[in-house]
Image 1 (tube, rainbow, N blue to C red):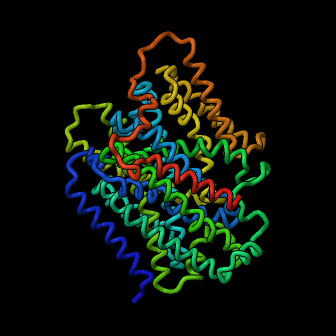
Image 2 (cartoon, rainbow, N blue to C red):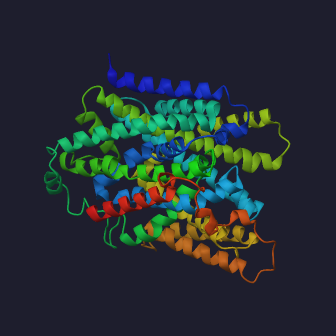
Image 3 (cartoon, helix red, strand yellow):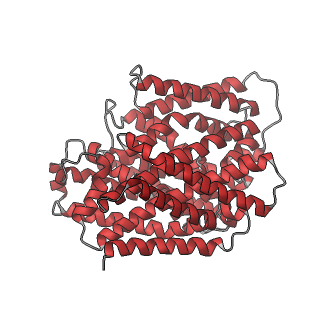
Amino acid sequence: MNWDLLIPILYLAGVAWIGLRVGSGTQDARSLFLADRGLGFGVVGTSLFASNVSSTTLIGLAGAAYVTGIAVSAYEWMAALILVFAAIFIVPIYMRTQILTIPDYMERRFDRGARVYVAALMMFLSVIVDTAASLYAGALVLTVFVPGLPLWPTLIGLGVFAGVYTSVGGLKAVMLTDVAQAVVLIVGSLVITYFAFAEYGFDWAGVRAAVPEGHLHLIRPASDTELPWPGLLLGLPILGFYYWTTNQYISQRFLAAKNLDHARWGTVLAAGLKLLPLFIMVLPGAMAIGFLPDLARPDEVFPTMARELLPVGLRGLVIAAVMAAIMSTIDSTLNAASAIAVYDLAQLQKRDLAPKRLLLIARLTTIGFMIVAIGWAPMIARFPGLFAYLQEVFAYAVPPVAAVYLGGIFWRGARRSAAMPTLAIGHVAGLSLFAATKLGWWGLHFTVNAFILAVFSAVVLVIASVGRPREPAPDAGTLWSPSLATVTAGQSVLKDYRLWAALVVVAVAASILVFA
């Protein structure tokens, strides 16, 4: 019996069963996209973690660490801090307004034009960047595990499987399978870490001696080409804010929580889980340079370690972990893109659509986006590094959106009519900066460029707001106020999300001190 194939097959069968079982109870689009707003913090937190740790994360982080060291894990520990920020400032607003999608917030705070603009951008990023990249990464790792496996049929098989069970089961199926997938991801990554460390006889001094100078440091000099410290401190928070607070496929998890307490607890739980990738996903890639020094493509380091270091059976577990990573992201991004298409585009055009009709449109849209992602995925092979592809696209696309959201939440003076010019001008500036960078006219790192674009967009928002004719005051529910940071009266200390959030911040600080 081939255990390396049996374990992934059993995993896929379990995912399909959950999708079909949950799908039988899905009656309308709201249950398909919001899981009836009834999920607890454990499901919310593990789903946030699993949907983020995609196959691009497993492969891309290991590949980047192989070349440049553990500094790439800054994306992970920065995410922990941003999730703490979200629990305090963002989640209460989303739960209070009971929005259906994140672009829905844009209309409530600004206007319909901003809603449609952001919806179109998010659909593009979800399908062309997130879904397609995960499909490519998944197909890549499977072709390494199974030599001779063709890329196209593998892509199609992965996409069709994820698309079908997502269109049937919806967000509830996605999040419930994420719980199991998070466990598989963590266990599979721990196995890789164990065997990579075993190559050095579990001797940390041996690791330090074998890897290049600076490979095991989180903070890089300003001249570093991969992640300079100005980009780490200035640009990463901007990219992270968009991803963890305004990205539909992540924020759907907040919206699916049964109440504000569970949404906050789940967010802080996810923040704690984001401390793990440094140790179980990034470090193995950094260590691999010592015993796999001649790999032609950095993206192959993770599958190569699994193939050459692991015994039969454990290889199957790691394949299942990769499959879990693939499915947890593809199902999430497809569901999110479909939610935006239904609520922010279709329903705006025709508000009297019957629930069953809306559900049919939602499922057909999911399948349509799946087909588009399958068609685009092979193109990603043209980029030198998978993780670089993801981050560079986001660096020029999302800062204007982040600036508008932050301005809308924290500045009452941001005018409703200011969002559209800010987004349009910000994206023209982003395209110009991207072109100047590619032509060699501008040499700053893309993370620094993200910060520059965010500041530029914020200035545009201020200019577009100040001196304009008076407008109706914004809905108070769309603005943050200090009262939103309070906890439910009578809760025990152990249920106070602020305690656990503080512990996460301390853990991040300790990690930085150890590896700085």
